[in-house]
Image (cartoon, rainbow, N blue to C red; front, side, top):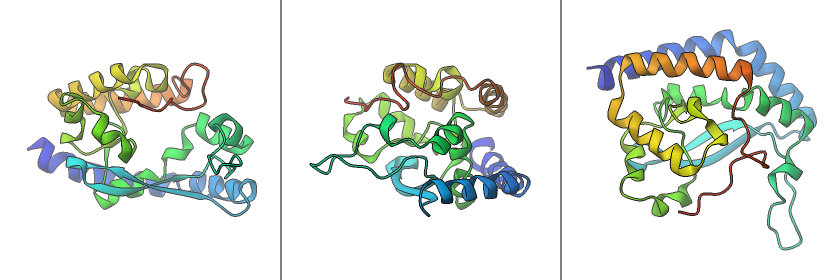
Amino acid sequence: MYKHFIKPLGDFIIALFLLIILSPIIISTAILLLIANNGKVFFFQQRPGLNNKPFKIVKFKTMRDAFEKEGIPLPDELRLTKVGAIVRSASLDELLQLINVLKGDMSLVGPRPLLMQYLPRYSPEQAKRHNVKPGITGWAQVNGRNAISWEQKYKYDVEYVEKQSLLLDIKILWMTFINVIQRKGISSDGHVTMEEFKG
């Protein structure tokens, strides 16, 4: 009942409510990034959703387009703009994913949607993270986010899939609010983002 009806309905209502009340912050962030990124405000990328079905995630663009001579993107720390760093530190770059929640691609709570190229690198156990919709926040995010290893993240993801409930979702949403205020786990050790998962 909760997983198939109450949670999807709650996701839609809460996401719509948050988009409305947070619209001044979203608009202000868009204007700042419009100036900082020479007109490029949004970042779209294909990610795997429920049962590995691809969807396009939408986020605020916090990094500039900069490449080495070979066409390889420069390291994240060199592409992250000053405005982008502020947006990331306050987790404002994730707000637009409320649109993905409205569309039904994502949930408020669930394993984070990672890169398509990671799919063949998962162990059978780790692959269970795709048995539910990906979320804006999740059990791994409130237990370390980018400050813990990939193995630890996936362990938390699978644990969430197996124990998903209303009480657990409420707990994760509350812990997310506290972590955002305290800006916990935004970066991995020595990096502005998490290192690539190699399998």
